[in-house]
Each structure stands twice: as structure tokens, then as C-alpha cells.
Amino acid sequence: MIKSEPKGLDWEVIQRLDELKQLKANLGKEDKDKNLPNVEAIIKAYQTKNISSKGDLVTFWCDGKLVAGPKKFDPKELYALSSKQGSTGLWVEGIDGSKPQQLNIFFSLFPSQPRFAQHKILISLRNPNTQAPNTDMQTLTLPCLEDTGATLMKLHAQDVAELERLSGTNLPIMGSFMMITASNPVTARRMVVQANIWHNGRYIIPRWVDTEACVSPDPQGKANMSHNRLSGVWVHHTLTVLSLLDNTFRKHVGSNIWEILNTLVIPDPMLAQPPPILAGFNPGPQTTGATPAAPSP
Image 1 (spheres, rainbow, N blue to C red):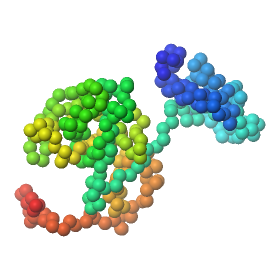
Image 2 (tube, one colour):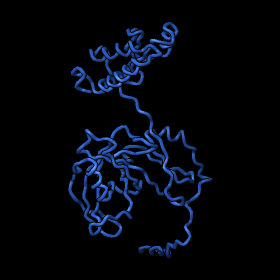
Image 3 (tube, rainbow, N blue to C red):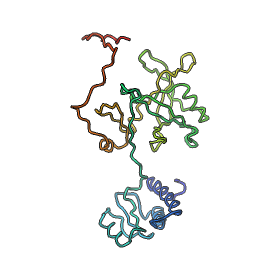
Image 4 (spheres, helix red, strand yellow):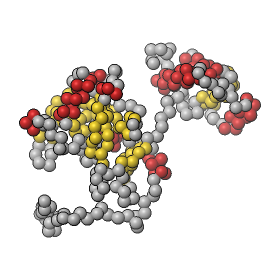
């Protein structure tokens, strides 16, 4: 994409040119609005630096010719041109800037167990060492426990082996470290993977995120699949993650916090209910100044 464009163009312009060329190819097949001449003229204008991505200015094009701008967008000018030009052959360039447009991400995770606010998320993984030829055939998608407080993604040893088998090469290893667990410290390998979220049959993040992952050795060389994989915190550094007082235990994930808040029902604290009291759970006697008694099994 970069090599095919003149030197000295901004990265945003190069991305916009790539998008315009795709539009040109599609308009060559069907162009109801007669905008192919405009797209061709805008491509040439970007390549010759007659227009740029600087500032929040727009240009108006009619039948392949620049008729106004660069200037601040004024809807009244658009209405006047539209009235004069008609419904075809009119294009406003720069209304959304030169960056490729991205759809907002928003989905909800339902609890994996009805009585607990525990969630699983599907994480797709790729090997950074083979990112250029990576396809779905080199991608491994796994269910991970979400929002556990784990700082790193935790995988099983056989997950790493399978990902390396699919990619045909080893993952980038960063060494080993002591991982503190509830029972005792264990030695864990630290590595880098490329991660995405799989939801509704597609990868929902527009780029693959480089993130750290760890894997502890399987006991006596045997795969231990009883322990949950953990997603780590990279999801929370990439997207907005919210939970609300709606008594559904759902977790809401998205790229635009205002869209999430506008979509969801505003919770009423007066109607909110605490988590259910679990039958058979004995927290032990209340104590002060000492370690509380452990729950009865």
C-alpha cells in the first residue's frame, strides 16, 4: 500500500487513498450516484498534494471537479450545491477526516453460570512470528475466563503447542517468572501472542493486539484442562468494559462508552438486588484482629 504511493504522503492520506481505490473498483461495477469521476479526481488530488488531511477542512466536488474548499463544512453550502447539481455527481471529501472509518464495537457477555457474575469470552490467537501470512487456518480461538484480576493471559501448554503447530514456528518467548497462585508459586513461561475477540462469527477488533501470555507446565507432562484459561487485562486496555446494577450479571464491552450508556437501561439503585445467598455456604464466625475462618467445604 505504501510503496504504491508517491513519497512524502502522510500515513492517514495513504490509508484514505487505499480506501478510495477500493471505492473506485466498486464504483466501476455500479455507480448509481455517478461519483466515479469524483473519486478519480480526489485520488489524483491527494497524490499530488493538492489536498491534504490537515485540520478539519472539507472540499466539495462535482462531476470530477473541485468546486469549493478547502474550508470548514457548512451544511447550507451542501444544500445549495445539491439543489443546483441534483442527486448525483456530488461528493464532500474530508467530512470524517482521512482516517478509515471504524464501526463502534458493542456486545454483552452473559454469565457462564446463572448465579455467578462469571463470564467467558472467546479469544482468537495468532503467532506474531508469522503475522504476514496469518489466516484463519493459523488462528486458534479459545474460551477464556474474563476479568479475574490476572495481569497476564494464561494459556495451557497444549494451547501453545497447537498454536505453534498451526503457524509452523515457535512463539516469541520472553523467559520465565514466578507466578503467584492461591496454592503456591509456580514457574511459568512468558511469551507474546497476537489476540483478538471472536464474537458473532467475526473478529471484532480492527487490529490484532500484541499481548503477553503465560503458561505453567502441565503436572508430570500431562495436560491439565481443568483449570480455566484467563483472558488477562489486555481487553480492558483496549475496550471499555462495564457492569451495571441490572440484576442480569451481564458484562458490557464496547469501543464507545457513550454508546454503551445510551443503549443500556439506566439502573435504579432502589430496585437493585444483591447477589443471591448461596445455600450451604458458611462464612464462619466473625472475628476481628485475626484471619477469618475459611468457608466450610
